Image 1 (spheres, rainbow, N blue to C red):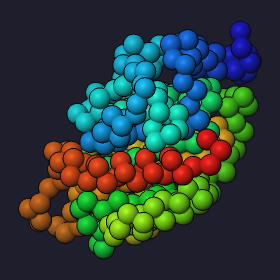
Image 2 (image 1 turned 180 degrees about the vertical axis):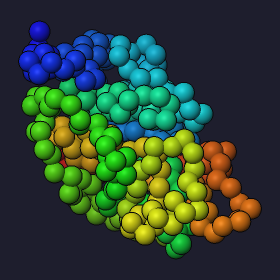
Image 3 (image 1 turned 180 degrees about the horizontal axis):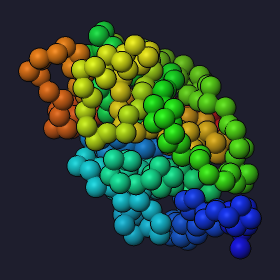
Image 4 (image 1 turned 60 degrees about the vertical axis):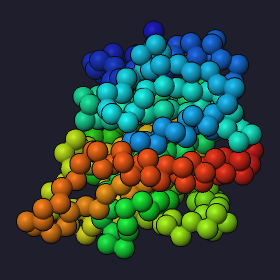
Length: 297
């Protein structure tokens, strides 16, 4: 019986989520089937799975074949874990992610991040599709995430709830500075070198979905200081920071949030995927160059 279960039993609680041993079994399963030892983990968001296709000399695993792994059910999320080489660095890439609105508890959708930790990953790159709240943002803009607002977490849904296992990280991790400044500065430099005048930097707010926001909700989120809104990324970054990883996040603005009542325009997932196809190569180029320029990986 491991330490986490002992703590739970002493307090009369059942274990919340999966234990360290569960995560280790999944990591060991993968280590036995690939020779790659990644230091960089990448999550591809809606319509952005093409980045994973750039990985060469790869070993690929369907999520459904990996013990304990959550399986994606959303169009635009292929559901494959890919190990290999990207622009000279060894990476593990999630081609598609899972979300809370698919029915997964928040600890389950962040399970892959803990697996990455035990695989040796030190830096997490998370991409997503997001709705633009900032009136200066246009569809197709890329936004480097400077900070986030964990709206579900402020209302009681946090992936770190439950007994803490010190082998992953501390009980009370700080979330200020979650998005590494050095990586953000590198990305901005790369954008200038590539002549990308559509790259922004701002704040991402998560809401659980699957509904797109009402007009009043969009106005509220903008008042909170958010520039874009989406349904992912934040839980994964929280767990990655808990595990001591550096984090970099980037959002693709796939639609402008409806901010006026009685507006005939409606947000929809098809628009998200279409914009992902339109701008995905630019994001791929930026992320691949960022990976190439990373030090100590």
